[in-house]
Image 1 (cartoon, rainbow, N blue to C red):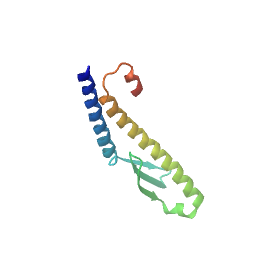
Image 2: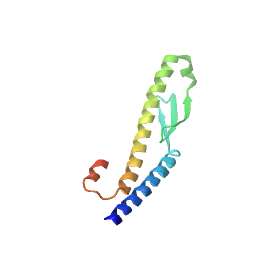
Image 3: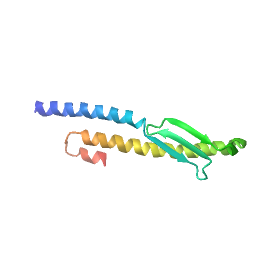
Length: 108
């Protein structure tokens, strides 16, 4: 019994290390998003850190339009980055979980 418990604890520590490594790797995964007309482009990491914003100079003439573009495009980029982040971390967590009946349904 204690051998199984020690084995599970070791597996959980290994999984925690893999999760941390995955989080670090996701800092280098870049997500690009453009507005529908291509006037704004944002780049962020899969950990949702903004790296770059490119604006067409025509947007600088209309503050309200620029703000709308930024909000819409950033929200879409964050949504895409979040999907990548959650998928990657869930895969690592699921792979490293001990085989406990009923736990597999948590990661579907």
